[in-house]
Length: 420
Image 1 (cartoon, helix red, strand yellow):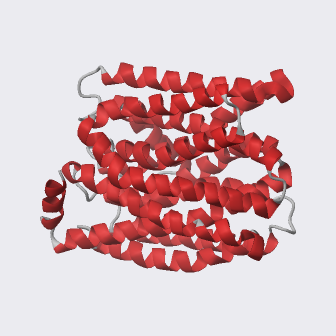
Image 2 (image 1 turned 180 degrees about the vertical axis):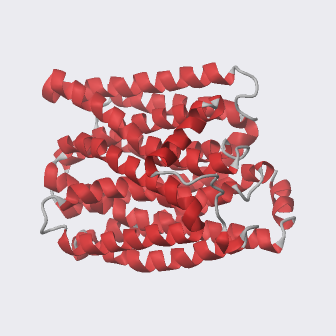
Image 3 (image 1 turned 60 degrees about the vertical axis):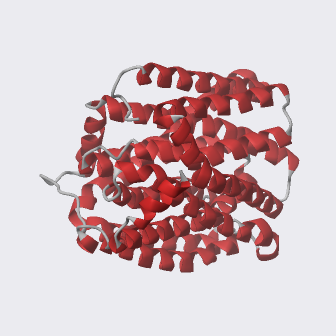
């Protein structure tokens, strides 16, 4: 197996090797930047509003998601990949620097920064992975995708050192300034990634007609509705993110009751995410290859929700902070590794339009908007049961995992639904 992997890598042309190198570096820097932003935004939000406000923030991401994906699908064919990436990067840098100075002074800003953080990171990865899907063949994806994700997780592990060990000394908000040089390096790497593709830095998506923002978004939805294959991808993405959101909420609710200082919360979250990134690296580099090699794509899609369901069952019977922290590490590391890799492989046989614009609807809009569906579930349990709703909410997580398992088992019975 290792010999085959070595031979595959040696068989690559120099242009292919440079493409893989720079694409990996892009994933490295995107993940590194987010590893700084995420614990800061979570801790600042939790301190400002409390864990009860998280569902409202997740609901608020839906209109922002709709706006951003619509604008992305509209202007991507006109601007091309490089100009679109440069525009979004400049906007993210400006917002990060603004928040570093004003998060303490504007009462609404922690809320706005949190929902922006939820959306922009998916768009950054979307721009990278659409280019990767358009360049890497299906046969090479089985061993290269794990390496792509593994290098990204390495970047996240290094990035998590900053909030994990310096938040108390520097202050949570000051950490945001460190993201500027990361984005400078990322921009250079994205430029050279595009340069190694067939179309070069002028890479564009064909657009047969000029569309308004809403029509561009509707075009992506239409492609999904017309394809059982894309509908299947949409379904598993929504279920994964709903389950992840419920566990995320339970983790933050117990964190709020256990650790009271803002900067200590940033450090604990940074260290927990550091564990997530370490687990993610192992799963991405070794676990994903072994999973697809021994189970194949189809059975892998069944194994993941089954494993995560067992963690939620364990927390139901042992409701301690350590257990929910472990469940949190498991689902987040799995989401960023095994699930992400076998999900990304599914996009390879699709058309360029589906890889860019239908994928944007699924992996940006649906990915984050699934949190809104989970928010309705949280608020519903909270309204009916009051302060005692957390144990019952965990049963909701278990139920969603079982629905996910049933959906995958049902759809995978159809021959040709997923390529093995």
